Length: 288
Image (cartoon, rainbow, N blue to C red; front, side):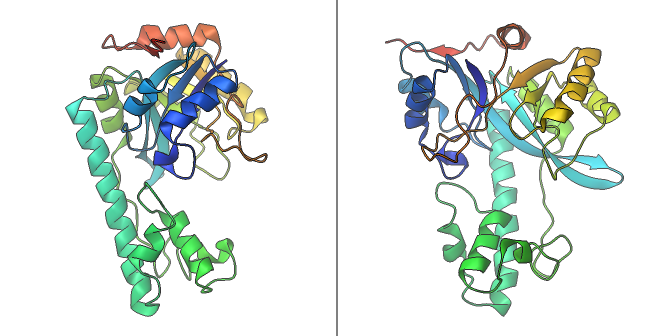
């Protein structure tokens, strides 16, 4: 089983990278890609903890901006087989994390001006090992009793786009991220291109990303509705893009969590991914 999208506690609530490798092996994975959001800090620990017969793909997930109909929208790009010590890549990730924290702090300051109980510390406690975002602010509003539901928290009266306490995102551009991933020896793949309630890129827009260096589409993923996958396959075939799959699992042991292996990549496509890597970075196999 080849699962090319798992994330650890460094992306949010979930298993530590070391524990995640053990859970992946017990789930039957033979290859797994650790693709945390805006950080590669978990890769070294995952490498040290690799069980026998499990191969690790060093990866990263980078939310970035594309312009659609004159507005900036967000997509996820995953970089596979990256050099995790590449300085331009590390600088880009650090800057993106800084943008995220600055945005969160501004929204907290707006809220605290009217509601002093909404402090940075209160919000940060809801986001251990990561930088808070709007979901954490929404939960803080709910826990403080200022809203009656998360839906209300995302309304224009609170954190909704254009709302009183909303701050626009500042994030790297997709063309910049594609170039940095390529320069770090990596293979860029568009993550969850048909995710519900998110931007649905057209074939023309995906073609533009392909011209900028995009190498693949993450199609077999629980976040992509099944009826949307065949059209994506046709786009991938037309553009000669690699088709990947992954679960998005964070290794939660609970019964309702997404399990490792809920989305997988074929061996043929995995071999294409390996061939597309530019720098000679190899998957990490256990030495045990």
